[in-house]
Each structure stands twice: as structure tokens, then as C-alpha cells.
Image (cartoon, rainbow, N blue to C red; front, side):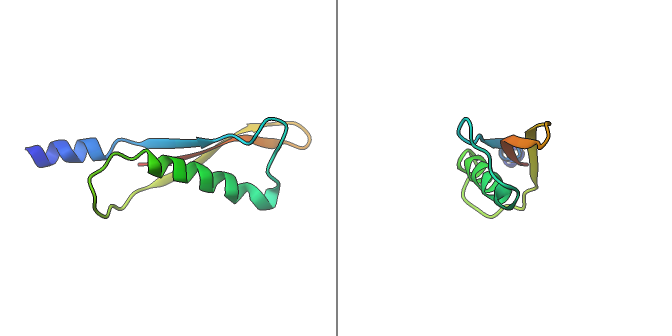
Length: 79
């Protein structure tokens, strides 16, 4: 039973968010940098016991649709 409780606790999704500084945007060739930072923030927030886990990583973004549009927040969720 204790093992099941540990599995429930360890499967809580954690989302990291990276917002570029106000007035700056990352270019098309730099979007991976925003997602890299968001993923690292999510990994830093995981509260799991030591060990190896297979996880799902979901990348999303908040975009400002203009001409041209830009990404204003990069999100990475570890499930």
C-alpha cells in the first residue's frame, strides 16, 4: 500500500515556465532555449525519490498573435 501512495505522489505533473525579459523575444532559431529553460525549471521542481523514471514531457507556449507573432511564455510539463 505504501508503494501505491509513493507512485501517486511521484506522478504529479510539474510545469516549468520561462518568460523572456520584457521587450525581448527569442528568434525562430532560439525557441529551443526557451523550452530548455522551462524544462529545467520543471525538473528542478520534481519531488520524486531518487531513481530513473520514464516521463512524458509536454511543451506548450503562450503566443502573442500579431504580424509577426511572438512567444511570450514557454512551458514544459513533466508528467
